Image 1 (cartoon, protein in one colour):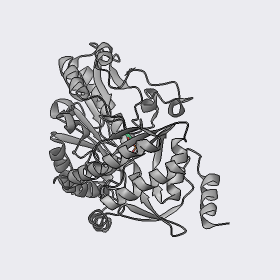
Image 2: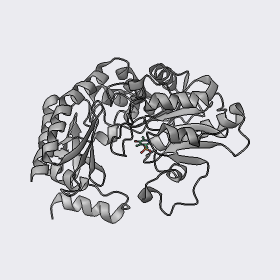
Image 3: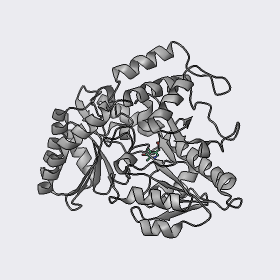
Length: 400
Ligand SMILES: *Cc1c(COP(=O)(O)O)cnc(C)c1O
């Protein structure tokens, strides 16, 4: 039995079957490339769903993590560490907001935004107790907690986890009319992804985000942008909202904020929102810990120049015409924003999973979104040659 099969059998025997990974066992990674236990190299065109925007083991981030490991790793928030302040200040600067609230995973940051929005709804807007609603979008992905799956429209993610948390209204994504209808005097917030990542890199119609902003302002409702996957340079701007010069009331961040090293998430908001949070009303043992703050701070400092945004734009400019040319080979739809792409393939040809399986055979790792859609999110350290390797692998896989 090969080592690959031994590893897979261990996982299948002792770890719950909550994923269906490609049958490859990785052991090393550097930049945009990973190596499996048999020494075969692959281009990582998923990049941990954008958690690896800076690639595997970026030297600057690894050095900062090592340094902090030798200094102080955990305090809990019962005590101050010297790492949280600089991280909070610079992340506030990056977002243009007054304050941040640090957590760990993306789902926790979404939960945090939901709690803050509800409190704001009661304490500031004056919504009667327990009547607040939050409007969310069909096809959303905001994480896996019981409250978050309560407003999921994906049956696989939601089934048999009830009773579900009340207080959410789901409207079609991209439909301003439906959103307007769903908002009433009890609405505290609108929660959306500015681009739906798990949904298949769905980019809403031009003008939609600014339309959402206008509706929220007009009805005194908080706009919450979940930028966990779309933010931090993936789309060629710091935030996907920047493409329409839209500023939400709350940014939700995660994934790349941890530099591909550890989970780091946060929300950012101004005082008029964040001041509803008081000691003891929310928290996390690990949120804002010194190691996370040190790595997160290094990430933020890297993002304070345009370097990563311009890399994402350059990769997007290079991949767009090449992906468009795949229409000859059964690709029906191509959506690109920065270094992020969703491809719909002819469902009669193969499923997204089958395509990803074949691509792995050609040395490129990608992930299906659903049915016959795949998403591509190479690390921003990838070169244009790497992008060619990626597109060539798709083409060969579709032709086979
Ligand atoms: C991945 C993701 C989350 C959840 O993040 P976790 O760290 O997996 O909890 C939330 N929102 C969006 C948009 C995501 O892509």
